[in-house]
Length: 464
Image 1: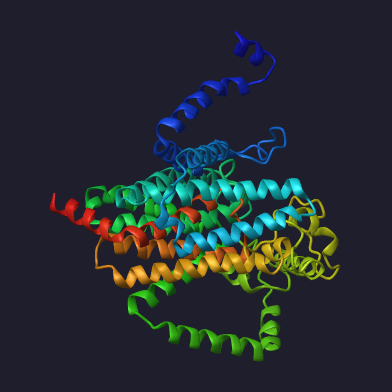
Image 2: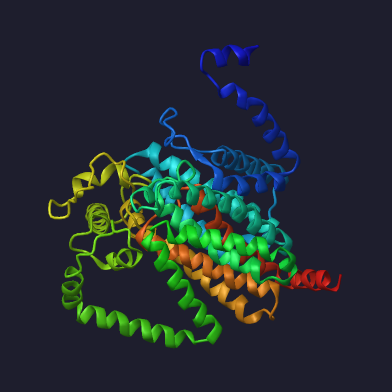
């Protein structure tokens, strides 16, 4: 009766109470099932702010579930007073603790404490679920495969929905910016996520155990590929090229010294000929609004007339100016969008610039933290990345050929696509990108700690 009365008053939230109670009971009785519900729900989650529901920036149902899982995780820690020591001692966990500690410190000194506390809590619930609980589940290679399936299946459904929606609008470039709504905010985050999961579908396709599912996996690969192409996400395209080049490095076993030497030469070349390079780039006037894919690719290097590229430069320059003002502690985690407007130079302002803080963030996972958390912000994040590649590379070259090695290889590529995207965009404040990103780190950490046991599990499954 209460629910009927509330519905009559156009208050529908009470209808969610039974669902919330089921989830609450499930959380205490079976955390792993709640974990899988979160993973499956992520590509299908909706942002309340985008739906104009109370102006609350929250992804449902994932963020309430993640918050609940975080509370349960800490309650269990307090009750059991123990956690997997191998995980706690692992270099990845130490790097994560360093990053979290610095985020907490800069939250305490933030110019906008409420915003920064929300940022810190969001990072904490992503890590609690996908890393600290995830590493326990990913001790079993079967659970890693389950994670891949439970994320890629709903993502494929969203990609099909987007493709159909886009087709109804003639596959034009402008509708490509919003046809993935309400599941994704815009084409950039959509492109980043489908690009990130492309190597994962490739991984599933490469596993012999799924030979009977090959038609389904090939269909998923085609759907994901079309999603990448018609997202018109230039950073997504670049990220796949980067992942492909990295795959050659691993397959050809090119030594790190050669890679570093080559990288150093490239940087030296760029430094010496920087003025000439900028001059060439400024001659490119191909705009990113073109519906021709070739011309759209050409627009990547247009820094003279392309509004999207110029606005990205505007955001980066604003972040650097903010960093100069507060180089040690920054302005506070999550505050960039609310603080950058006064730091925009009149020379950098574009036709899509805004002072309202509603046009996205700093467009970089590295430059954004520089403004928000000071010099140690990006450095602590880079530390996590370095540990990931060191441990993942060690595993790739140590493990024998087989399923586990393939998983490590494709997770490295998937992680790399996001990092390349992360130099030009920042989506780790969204569940769509953050859940697979931290899960990939959790997967590598779990394999690093338990690979001998997991190899035995793999052998036993083959023998059966």
